[in-house]
Image 1 (cartoon, rainbow, N blue to C red):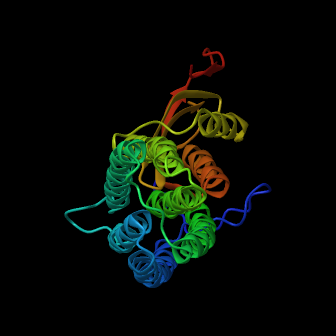
Image 2: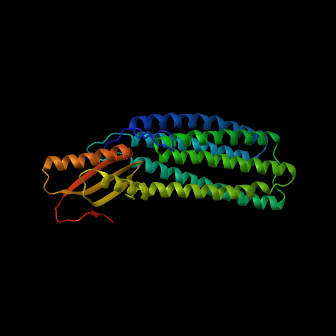
Image 3: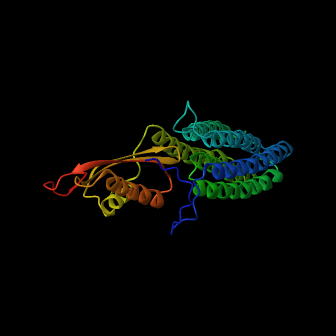
Length: 320
């Protein structure tokens, strides 16, 4: 039995979650366009401030912001492709393309972190030599504006990612956060340089580098799990098990398998029912279980329920 869930999840702890492909695509495209416009304006502004104030840190920060334009374009492409309907070549849909996009963004984050780290090491050497110049005040104000804007973009994009369960949007949100952290490092470094401690800039950059690399690893691991049929969380599996055993007519749970597929999940269940039931009665029990899983877990895209005969001499059983 197949479950194509387009329902919203009424969760007590989170905002209403959306699983409808068209709605997810619309939200993703809108958020990506906002990101592209904001990052373009911000990167041009930071580049101008860096050049006018003779701040190498701010120029590097501007390049970092420009990379966010590429990441947002990738997100828009990935979400649009993932929302495509099933076809003859892809009968299970295209949701894994969003995982590919998230992996690409994780790669960009990793490269960004390495770039910041390498630049920080180089600037440490310059600071120790006393050849790291003090930038102008304009670069300091540009860093403040960048932190505020990029942090706001992080929360805006993360809210959309949480609502749509989108790994690509979540990766893009953390790309915004990495830019905000980079700008904080620029601010500390510029301020330190203006106060006579230029080495603060590269030290802050190295600390930020480790944070960004950790985020890149987490995003890559989550996306990889979704691409290799990793099982759902233990709490989800336990919920399905309880639903199965609580469904009237289900005498035992013979087998239960789950796998993640992009932002969706697949469920395969084998249940035992009274062998004396006719095929219609057994089907109705399976249909009830199918409906229970669909209503409780809207992220389930396909749910297969297989019925096994349970003879009167058989005792109750539960899959381990």
